[in-house]
Image (cartoon, helix red, strand yellow):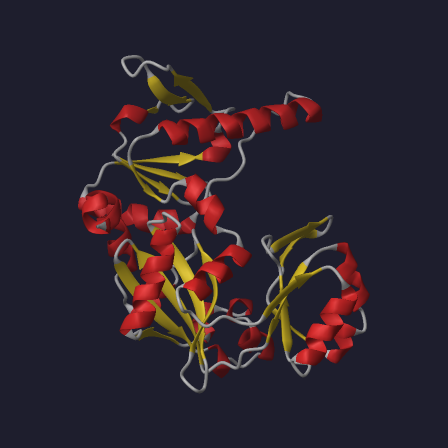
Length: 325
């Protein structure tokens, strides 16, 4: 059985599950916000005794029957509304640790294991490994020192971008928003003193011919051109995520053999079975590694390019180490 660890609002999981149904593939979807209020964990240290999750709906997840896990998009557990905030904080932390402990005891094929995902999320370590493998990377400064940011801005002729180290979502009392990659202008530099409050990634601006999203499923590599420079909105040209995918042309892309091999290698170096890599193809046809998302989105690409990404994932989950070798 394939276990999908995710949340109720994960439409990529919905997309894959539709194919599971069509193919008759047994699976179990575990939305982690259902724990512990709607699911009871029973785990004995003896393999002869029960290791399962029992849900209020009557469903039972027998962990001994899981042969592969798609660790997709879990969210925080949801404590009971009957508890105080202090108790909720305690219960949420305990529930998170309980689930992580369970995942660490499962001897099966992971796409990908949460420990490997966590390690691979650090953008600075990604850049270091990418350089070691021979990728070209942007010149990078991480700082919360305004003077250093100003010096970097001048060093690269005022052509600089800024992006967050980890969290792209920013919540306020009015709701949440996404922090995109932004070109740093002279006007923005007038308020550069605010950098002192939090470290920021600054990089020299890399001109784009197209942006490349590389999805690596085990040994299979699928590259897609994202023609952000043809977008009507300038902000979308700086970060294609600002616009609608349908408004930005997407085409399959053939990577040079050495670049494809490096993509495959950096994913394996982290012990991952899947990752989405973002690169720029410059006007001079140079590939520049930007970053890697060890649990990135991909489902929007398949309808636009007809690349068999869903099949690649399903094959990986079914065949496991055989396909990963």
